[in-house]
Length: 71
Image (tube, rainbow, N blue to C red; front, side, top):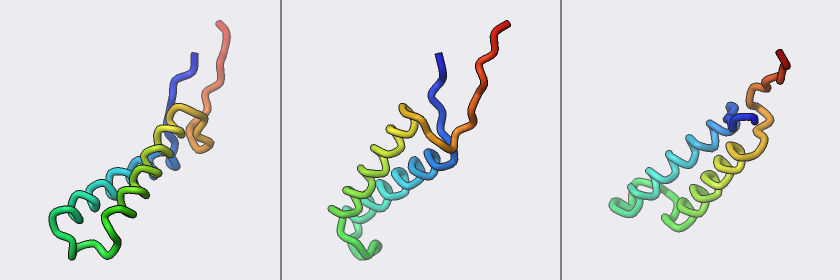
């Protein structure tokens, strides 16, 4: 069975989720730091999180491929 892996595209999506979630939390406590509304920041963060999970569970095209060999 093949392991789930992330390539650079998946890690980019994970980083987007983490950064946008942090910006959402900052926007809740100090609304003058981020130019966009908290609602849209949260929406984009959720989309990035869904993309990261989909790339991890599915087939990330940028992940390293392993060849199955029989001994």
